[in-house]
Image (cartoon, rainbow, N blue to C red; front, top):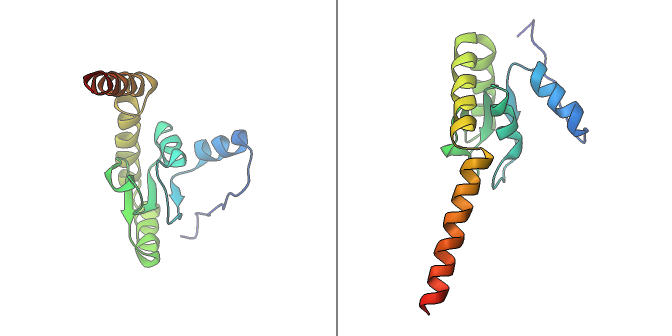
Length: 125
């Protein structure tokens, strides 16, 4: 798009990365392997829609578009660049997911539950 630009970030400080997230319209992750994509969670926490390759748990995350190929990624980038309503809707969906699911309280509760289950299993043996 003539009025848009893409900024490639690599080996940036955390501060510069978060500043870039805040100033962006969307986030794109091209990695082929991911377990828990922290960068996507950071983009979601700032209400930014994302595009990423299908890897790890990404296809179960809200607020973005999961793709399987380079042409699919290019198509998704064009879709987000040309549709501000889609960017806003996906960004809001991702932000809500962070607020309700990807937070310290939720993880703390899940971790405590897991530990109780493991202790119970260990004591049963």
